[in-house]
Amino acid sequence: MKNIEELKKYYFEHKNEFEKSNVFNEQNDNLNKFRNEYPLDKFNELSLEDYALGTDNKNSLCYQMEFGQYKHTGPGIGGSTAFKYGIYYSKDKNSFVTRAGIVTDPESTWKNIREDLLKVLYSVSDANSVNDIKDDFSSLKGMPMYIIKLAFCYFPEKLICIAGRKQLKGVLDLFEIEYNENYSSLQLAFLINQTIRYNIPEIANDSSITFGHLIWDFYYINNDNTERENKELGKKTWIYAPGENANKWEEFYKDGIMALNWDNLGDLRQYAKKSEIKEALLEESNS
Image: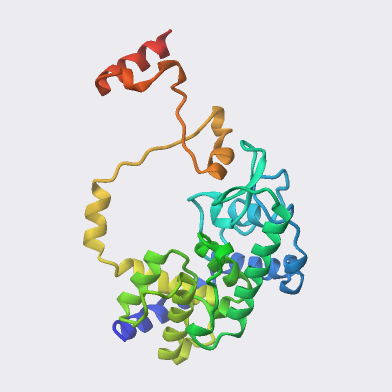
């Protein structure tokens, strides 16, 4: 493995400081709280109402993962759309939806998703190698980041605390860990955790929170800083707040849309140039 001695040095230089931090303590507390609130042997009894985003239940599992108590527990998965949870309630469509569209039998759809999620979780629990993990289920397409977060919350000792596929492959490449391109993101997270712990026996039994945090930091500072900084110099950031006082944020987020309140401009195809749109906007704001 490449960079393993450098990682080892960085890890032990920062371990004690990190484990005294509020982040470490909060993550530990939240992992314990999660497993007490959602014990795996009761997961099969979880109702759709207590699972899905979009309903009025702010205590649902997905709401807590996205906005609530467990937002920062395990890997972050904020952004994208609510489709990453498999099924959610769309107030705009007044129905439960999946990537395939409006669901005619939400309870049956949720039952299939729940059963397949459990199969994945149990395969992670029992896994001794990458190929022991089974997560190729049609009902779970488009859910890799959420599946990693969920599996980490139950079995943090099995996975690296990173959910994005690009970042997982970046870590693998940094340490020159061989992997199959056909591996799922969950399998990559398992492989990184297993390989690095094996190659640094001193941290084999360390907290998964410490392990994941320090490896992520090491990856970030060694991930082609020059290229990243050059890109960031040319980056523009926009603040987007839909609705008055951003009151449309959750609705737009769940439906995976962005919208601008330009209805009074009519069909934008009537404007020949951007400057004409700008002039129309100014006229509208002054009227």
